[in-house]
Image (cartoon, rainbow, N blue to C red; front, side, top):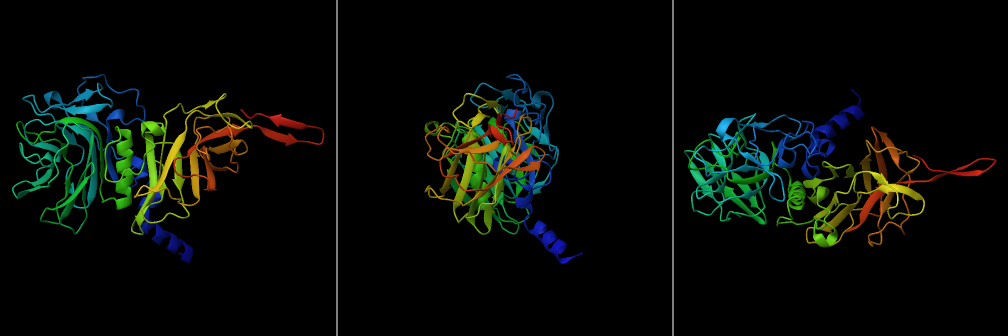
Length: 439
């Protein structure tokens, strides 16, 4: 084996999450089973087929909540123990009701716990008047409310002890709960919206259980409320990745209050760019994430000047992913995407920063008429909401499989919008000049 192959192999082992992790939540982890993303349940896509329009009718009993991570770690239930599908609120949810005599819970395809791992829940918890559980197994459980009327989030090791935070459960509020445990540490980090607290659970060998959602017993420890999304990693995500996933969930589920609200393009005043949020960022040299795509068509990577406590996070307006004429664009652009994206490029303190040049890749599968010669990147550099007065950026590179890259892009800045369009092309021959519209 030559020296170059040895060096490349070492780099692959050192940095697996950066090479593989661009299509998971917020662009962290991969959806093909190759990364540390082990379970990803999304109530807006219950069968995990990528189509949000074929979900069950409101009130349907949920037999299977399919895994979107690529690992087929589905959660299932039968009979009267099934939760219901709820479409009456702002967001589709799997609803667990602790009131009936028969407990509602769902069993995972795999069982156990991760002493080294991270889990995120987006939900609206309901105060059932008893203890309230998220993930549970025979050894431990993650508690929305530690015991009845204690009004404290916690963690239980069955037969050993209960460990209670000082954080009050945000009943009736769209919320993000996350739990993080590192191998070799006895500390469990508990995050609830903007609150962060470490609790010592007394051992390094237990951690995050994942056997079931809720507990299979009536009268205590049942799951209660609308569950929107559950994300589980089998190794603890780093601090930059926690912030990115929090911002992805916050934007998606109604601008939930979080500790580091980096992305503000999801606000109504910014245009509600709430959709398919993803990001790159860095806290320090040990906590960074420099390649992200998420579930959208835009991938950003290779920032040339990403400093400590700096992030670039983007999302789109959910306009149709199709080319249209008659939209604001420079004269040379005869058609452009209806969909636009907007970015927050800021520090953790909220100040505008510049992460340097970036590579921007677009997966244009299903969009006809695109060539490297006519594809243009459009950036709203004066931030006036229009692309009419902008200079289209050419020089796209065809990477194959309908993926096109604009490398070393320098004009992306905080709050700016971007999209893509197709330009007319001019052919000069020895007889005449021809303007051709590629379609």
